[in-house]
Image: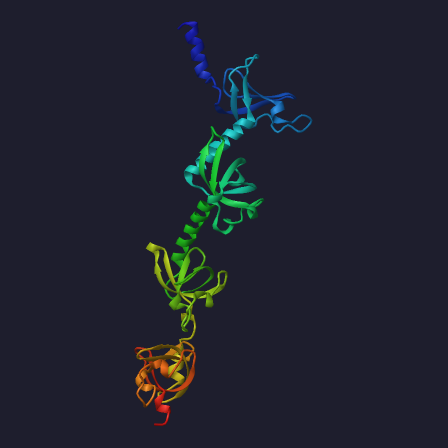
Length: 350
């Protein structure tokens, strides 16, 4: 073996570090201006005391401490490996961030400030960016309200070369919501009564957040009374108790009812208004074949055109107008089809 081969083998045995390597080391000595670290190389490594910033203060390291260090220079003028503790911590944090991105873990971020495109956050000690498009639903229109707050986020992008770290609050909320939705579907069943908060209104019903998922109260399930506008019954933010009437886990759909927690007015009507009773009704609409009258909240009866008068009637509107109150006689109750037949002429003289 030549001397050159011997030296090369000696270097390989000690594992000559390269610039940019992050290696494990053990603190050997802490001096006023430097820290000596054994990294398993031919020569000990040195960390500048200036980098650690402990002049006049208690040193942050002590002999025997195991640390990770970043190789700045394989060999200085004294033959030592120049190391950085601060850079090792930063690089290790970037590696951790990349691992968190790959695993999809939800993390906590501190919102530092707002800028034109979104929010600047602190994640794992790194400066990250939360685009306005990735802000959660609750604060989407008011980013300033999140400044100084701690919020859950998921890391979307890690680019160490460009010092670029992009996070999303929306993705974290979606994951949490998916977990709570799965838990919700495992707990509730058709017939359950649950509490929730009205989260949105549409022309066909109201969405209610019941803790993990939004359920829909169709407009027909809002009340036993006829409902023309959803906003006449509910407003966003209202807290309500609702009954679960249908579950579809595959489509993540939950159908809810508000009216089924109220007494069915049909039962009350049948119990209190027998055939032959005289009741007061309000005309709700007129048709060619007659008029519909509300005779009790949630109960409408049909006054057929032939029962308007003993005289011949060509048009319902010639006798009744919408909104008019009249006394009528209950002449038939169909409990199966839930229909009430009324007569105006049978309480009038011929």
